[in-house]
Amino acid sequence: MDKDINIKVKVWRQRGPKVKGKFVTYELKNISQGSSFLEMLDILNEQLINKGEEPVVFDHDCREGICGMCSLYINGHPHGPDEDITTCQLHMRTFDEGDTITVEPWRSAGFPVIRDLMVDRTAFDKIIQAGGYTSVNTGGVPDANAIPIPKADADEAMDAASCIGCGACVATCKNGSAMLFVSAKVSQLALLPQGRVEAARRAKRMVAKMDELGFGNCTNTGACEQECPKNISITHIARLNREFLKAKFKD
Image (cartoon, rainbow, N blue to C red):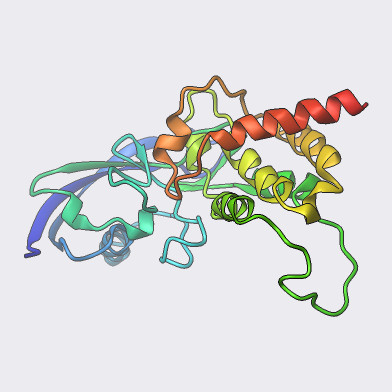
């Protein structure tokens, strides 16, 4: 049965990307363990506003684990200590009476801090713009079975497509690598016939854009796969490397 707990929240406060930040500790009393982590932050902000202080800025949208906006680093883990969930799906029953919870933004050169816990993840959009699409003519919708696709390929493509672009892989990687994100987006198209036409161009452009935006290289530590809320496998990184090498050999 859920109960009310008293906790301390150690939050990173930073007024902008060029301003030096610091941790500030707040005390919260009678927080229901049935509330979500973001609801707890809402309660904290309500208290700060009532005191005339500035609320903590944090990103959120769907609160259903779909959009990837709730990018918080909680107690040393992207999205918190629970597995296979995003921050908005994390509940306070994960924590106990008297706990001190440390909350930080994503730490990466590719994700500059906008304010407090909110980071700019525009870099992911730019990588997608570089090649994460297929060029098709508009018109009538073709039948779903017009192009036969092996079920194993379709399943793997769907697994890759479940990536929500939250950036947890970058945040947890000691190199700040975006390889898991890029490989998932390349895989979901490379596995399907509609994506094969532009496969070589896609791999080269997306990897080049990733490097340009300041993300690091992959050294196969596997931390990204461990912390990914959607269980994206690092086998997709191997496929990305194969796609990239094949594209280079065609040059």
